[in-house]
Image (cartoon, rainbow, N blue to C red; front, side):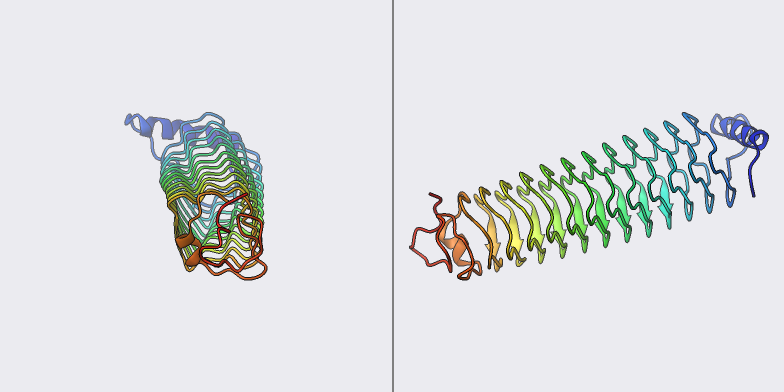
Length: 299
């Protein structure tokens, strides 16, 4: 069904009255085609967009908190600065959509595709994200603080200066992502894949990483102080200038890793790791690491 301007105006007016409890009724756009429609700065809290088509629609600055977007098509839609707090986005198609500076805190996102979408400065605080794709999306300075993210794809995404403070990440993929200066402080990463990601100067302080893969990644200057690793691989990974003070590195695989000038590593830490002749140790010598060799000390 294609909505006309007069019908839209009537529905929005009735929704405004419903919100103010002066009559009216909740806006329900189930199955409605809203392509190119404009909802800029409107109050649409708790509105229903189930199965709605919003190609190229403009919802910039709109209040969409607690709205239901199940099975909605938001491709190329503009939601810049929109408030989607506690909204539901299940099976959403959001490729190339614009969510820059939007608020997606406490949202429920599941089985949705936001490939190449724009999320710079977007807030995902306490969000629940499952089996969704942000592949090649722009997430610069996005905030995922305390979010729970499961089986989701951030491959080749731009996550520079993004914040995953105390986030819970399980079975997530960051293959080839750019995450310079990102913060994973206090985060828990379980069976995640950061292969070939660029994490230059990122922070993993007090993070917990279980069976997580960093193979071929650039981790130059990363802060791993007080991080806890249970297994995990760093094969052919750049770890130059990293800090490892107080980190637990049980069964970590450093074969082929470049640890030149890595700081605060101890004999006990390196003795727990797997190294081989292709490992470059902190003092620049080739591995494997031999206890009491002094190779754990940078030049």
